[in-house]
Length: 107
Image (cartoon, rainbow, N blue to C red):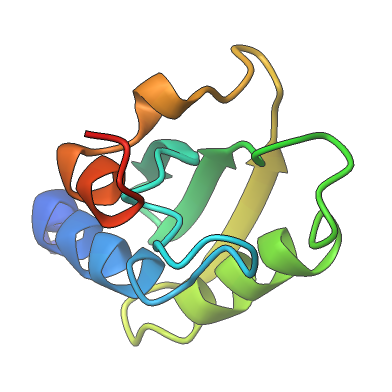
């Protein structure tokens, strides 16, 4: 019998990991910045993350998705992780959490 996977619990763990990754130019984590558009977990424990960057020519355009992938893969329950970058919709400050806006003095 196949074990029911708790995607919600795994999702929360993934979010915790995402909150440890920071945009190098802004002292706020990528989750609070609103760079993560979607986190999908399959029944095979494979994770797909849809994310954006603050700008298409972001200096970490290469390394940030790689870091996200590696950090998520480091979770015990995750078999594989894939990051897809999108600029649709483009990132705006409106996507930031209240916490992030407060941190950056935008409120």
